[in-house]
Structure formats: C-alpha cells, structure tokens
Image (cartoon, rainbow, N blue to C red; front, side, top):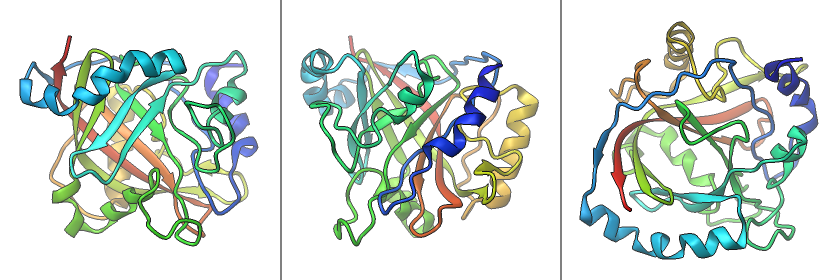
Length: 260
C-alpha cells in the first residue's frame, strides 16, 4: 500500500471532536519536486531580530531532538516553536504532539505546532498544523494558531502578510497568498477533490488544479501568485463549531536569509 493510501486510511483515526481543534490527517504525493527560487541574502538586521532564537537553538534541540524552529508573523500575532515528528508508526507521528508540550513531553491541551511528518525541509510545500483554541476556553484569542482567523478579513491582511520560519542556519520569509476554507465530506472525513493542501510537492498540472480550486474558495484576492517554480508554506487550523471545515493559509516563499 503506498503512502497516499496509508494516510487516507488514517483520516478517521485522528479527528479531534472537542472544543480544542487541530490537524488530524495528511496526504502526500509520490513525486519529489523540490524547488528553490527564492532570493538568498544575509541581511544583518533580520538576523539580529532573531538573535534570541539563534542563541537558544542548540539548547532547544538538546531538550527535544524533534525541535525544528520557530514560526513568527512579522506582526507578532503568532510566535511559536514547532517540531518535525518522526516515528516508525505513522499514526503515532501525527498524533504525538496534538496534546503534548514539545519541551516537557507532558500533557498540554493546546499541544505543539508541528510540521507534517512526511515533510523534509527541502520540500516544495512545508505544512504546519496548530490548534484553534476556542474563546470559551481562552478568551484572549492569542493562543497557538487561533490568530490565523484574523486573516479571513481582508482588512487584516496588510498588517499580517509576512511570516518567517527560523531554522538552525537560515530564515525563510513568506508572503500570504491565499486564505480559504477547505471542506471535508461529512460522511468520509475526506477533503473535496483538488483541495489536498497537505501535499508536500506537486507536479505542474496538480498545482495548477489545486490553485484553481483555492481561488474558487478564497476569502479575497491578495494579488500574490504562486507558480510551479515556487516553494510555499501551508498553515492549517480548525474552525469553531464546524468539524467539516479547516482554515488554510498558503504563503509564498520570497526570501532566504542565511545566518551561519
């Protein structure tokens, strides 16, 4: 059985049917279309603003070998560490951080932001999953991936359009391109055709079809275009009281800043 079939069989096992919602299933293509077309730079000012992470990277890695980096919106609405879980049991890999703190490995209802276990850092599409924390649980609306919902309103786009992933040796900068709801079939918990946002790579035809479907569903047009030569970032979180929906943010990689 190939990876795609295995993962589609996992769908029903990882649904989170409680007030705290998060990632629950993923799929991958069988193609490896790694691309790298971003601008590479070594801008000192950008490195300096992330000096805290650079200084603590080795310490965090020693705490948990699966620690991978930080995701920070330039606006500050999200500033979270994330991990890349690996496990011989693929179900365990996806489930590992849903209710677990990355640094203590103790139970935490908000879990940890994690990258798709099938990802490598060279993939065309890096996929991160994080909880949407219901206001009834945490009224501040600032926890985990909850602030992503601000981007559903076009008036919040300009302030929150830039995202940085800070890794051990580089910073990757992204610009938000698409904000939309992905819909699941209620009876099967499977995404509608063409909306497979969790693929780690696409062939040109597959990407064209996916982006066509995305544009049909997006909340507004950002003017940022993604092509087959681009790398991009996908963020997923849940939608309150709608188990059949997932909020998806797709952001285009626009710059790589070397640090070491």
